[in-house]
Image (cartoon, rainbow, N blue to C red):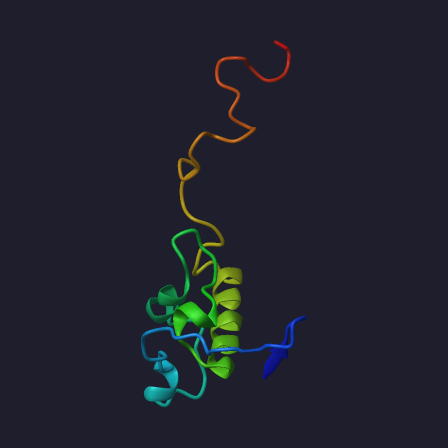
Length: 109
């Protein structure tokens, strides 16, 4: 669709070139109907290092299977088969607000 500027010229939008092929869905290729929450090895591919569920854009799953992956991950977390967050507290650098160093709990302000 062309847009008109104030001086009457039109500018056409060019489609973005990603430079590669779109990922095909692993589950569609292997003709999987339902994704099982007990298959932890397969579900770990769809979780980031911090424990977040990866998006469709990153995982390459189709819309239908991405929904099934999300539900399966949430069920596996509820059954304590997968962690909710990354393991260990030393993942955060700098410590955040809770790291008070040598000052103690609250008294030394």
